[in-house]
Image (cartoon, rainbow, N blue to C red; front, side, top):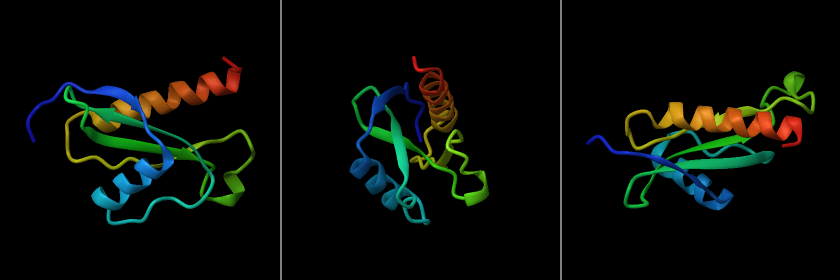
Amino acid sequence: MSESRLHLVPVRSREAKEFVRTWRRHPPPPAGRTFAVGAADESGVLRAVAIVGQPVALHLDDGATLEVTRTPSDGVSNANSMLDGAAWRAAQQSATGG
């Protein structure tokens, strides 16, 4: 894959799940998705997504914990790190009411 400059983009649930079906062998996460965020290249092509939701393990679902359940990409460099950071910042902002 060629090096590409990425930027964060909002992603609808349906689009995120379709991206997961295309780029991962595991199916999209079950219901309980809280939000999704994407990384797109300069031309606007979606290159990776992160789906964040309730923890899969029920004993961790305390109402305050979120889990990144899927982060597929097409192999572009640094997309997963960018999306993990964005998910963390969004979860922190949500927790503080900001």
